[in-house]
Amino acid sequence: MVATLQVLIFFVFMLAIFGLAVWALIDLLRRPAAAFVSAGKRTKGFWGAIVGVATAVSFASVPFPTGLPQFFTGLKIAAISVVSGAIAGEFLGGGQGFGELIRVAASQLDTPRVFSLIIYLSLLGLFMFGVVSWMQYRFVFWQRSSNTISSRAPR
Image (tube, rainbow, N blue to C red; front, top):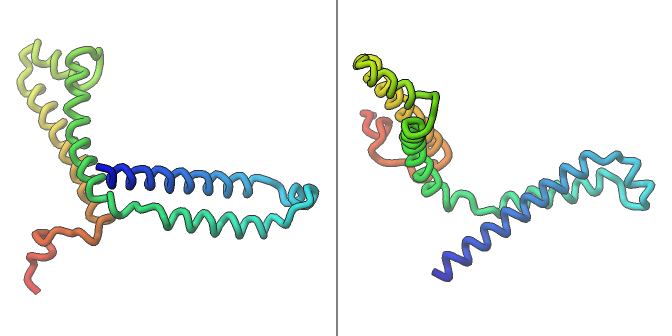
């Protein structure tokens, strides 16, 4: 419990430090070079190099890869849940959208339209799941499954 909390606090601090470094770099790039000289500071190039290196170091220290598999698992679940949640919300309180179209078609006994809308929404959910799975395959390259099509192909 304490170790998990420590990791979470570390991650939040590192993300905040990275955000501040990016903000400082953007702020530096927006300022005119003459403002540094007139304020008696070093040159804009000097500070650009310092802040650029600090931003790169802070980005490299954020531990993104350790949580990516769990992040993409959550995205896979959300990809399907968001479609079903939107439809349920449109059934209950919406005046437009696919839920309303299904409700109107069902009240008019237009069965082919109801099933075509359900199939369309199922394909939309599967497409979103596939996009997230593809992203996981691309970004979590160290944890690729051994039962993928490419690993079963004869060599």
